[in-house]
Image (cartoon, rainbow, N blue to C red; front, side, top):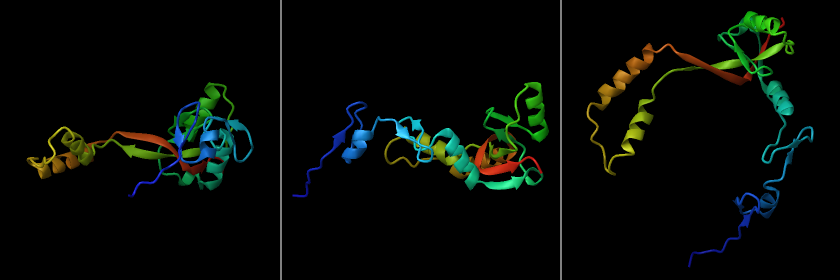
Length: 167
């Protein structure tokens, strides 16, 4: 016989199950920030301020003049700016306090169709041994050419890059 009895523990608040009794006991209890000790929601280990500081400390710092992408991100106001001048205009127009001498860089994402994911999704509705795709290479080449023509871009914060605004 290859069976083995296992003991599991269930949180009485949310019913999540764990093999570790201590984990189940602490499951829905508020956590504490591992840096400053501030009380947090369950499962969180860092408060927003300590997380921001940790990301900042670990990030690659570059001068604004060396930054090559178009957008900056100010997480205090949760806004993207095309450049530093636009950022300063925003602060002035909104009587907002300029609180940072730096901003997060951004990562650029191009609008593209992932043909492999699209085909995989379509295949999920087919029978088990389905392999009857006609003109597969033609489709792949068409999508590649179509993707290459796309110019739309999106930007998201890059928490690994800090742009130093005051030089």
